[in-house]
Image (cartoon, rainbow, N blue to C red; front, top):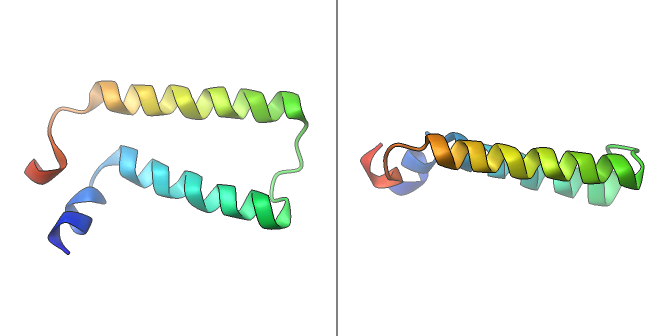
Length: 64
Protein backbone atom coordinates (compact mmCIF):
# COMPACT_ATOMS: atom_id res chain seq x y z
CA UNK A 1 0.00 0.00 0.00
CA UNK A 2 2.86 2.37 0.78
CA UNK A 3 4.31 1.91 -2.70
CA UNK A 4 0.98 2.83 -4.27
CA UNK A 5 0.71 5.99 -2.18
CA UNK A 6 4.33 6.88 -2.96
CA UNK A 7 3.70 6.27 -6.66
CA UNK A 8 0.80 8.72 -6.68
CA UNK A 9 3.24 11.50 -5.73
CA UNK A 10 4.82 11.12 -9.16
CA UNK A 11 3.56 13.40 -11.95
CA UNK A 12 4.47 10.71 -14.46
CA UNK A 13 2.36 8.08 -12.68
CA UNK A 14 -0.60 10.45 -12.30
CA UNK A 15 -0.30 11.37 -15.99
CA UNK A 16 -0.24 7.68 -16.93
CA UNK A 17 -3.40 7.04 -14.91
CA UNK A 18 -5.09 9.98 -16.61
CA UNK A 19 -4.08 8.65 -20.04
CA UNK A 20 -5.49 5.23 -19.16
CA UNK A 21 -8.83 6.74 -18.10
CA UNK A 22 -9.02 8.91 -21.22
CA UNK A 23 -8.17 5.91 -23.42
CA UNK A 24 -11.03 3.91 -21.93
CA UNK A 25 -13.42 6.83 -22.38
CA UNK A 26 -12.30 7.31 -25.97
CA UNK A 27 -12.54 3.62 -26.76
CA UNK A 28 -16.00 3.06 -25.34
CA UNK A 29 -17.87 6.33 -25.81
CA UNK A 30 -15.88 8.34 -28.33
CA UNK A 31 -15.10 11.02 -25.75
CA UNK A 32 -13.00 13.07 -28.19
CA UNK A 33 -14.44 13.21 -31.71
CA UNK A 34 -11.22 14.11 -33.52
CA UNK A 35 -9.73 13.30 -36.90
CA UNK A 36 -6.74 11.02 -37.40
CA UNK A 37 -4.50 14.06 -37.82
CA UNK A 38 -5.44 15.44 -34.41
CA UNK A 39 -5.13 12.00 -32.83
CA UNK A 40 -1.54 11.96 -34.11
CA UNK A 41 -0.91 15.47 -32.75
CA UNK A 42 -2.34 14.49 -29.36
CA UNK A 43 -0.19 11.33 -29.36
CA UNK A 44 2.96 13.37 -30.00
CA UNK A 45 1.97 15.76 -27.21
CA UNK A 46 1.46 12.89 -24.77
CA UNK A 47 4.79 11.32 -25.70
CA UNK A 48 6.51 14.68 -25.31
CA UNK A 49 5.04 15.21 -21.85
CA UNK A 50 6.20 11.77 -20.75
CA UNK A 51 9.74 12.60 -21.88
CA UNK A 52 9.64 15.96 -20.06
CA UNK A 53 8.35 14.33 -16.87
CA UNK A 54 11.06 11.69 -17.05
CA UNK A 55 13.76 14.31 -17.66
CA UNK A 56 12.65 16.29 -14.61
CA UNK A 57 12.52 13.27 -12.33
CA UNK A 58 15.09 13.65 -9.57
CA UNK A 59 14.42 10.70 -7.32
CA UNK A 60 13.11 7.16 -7.32
CA UNK A 61 9.53 6.42 -6.29
CA UNK A 62 10.70 4.61 -3.18
CA UNK A 63 12.45 7.80 -2.01
CA UNK A 64 9.38 10.04 -2.27
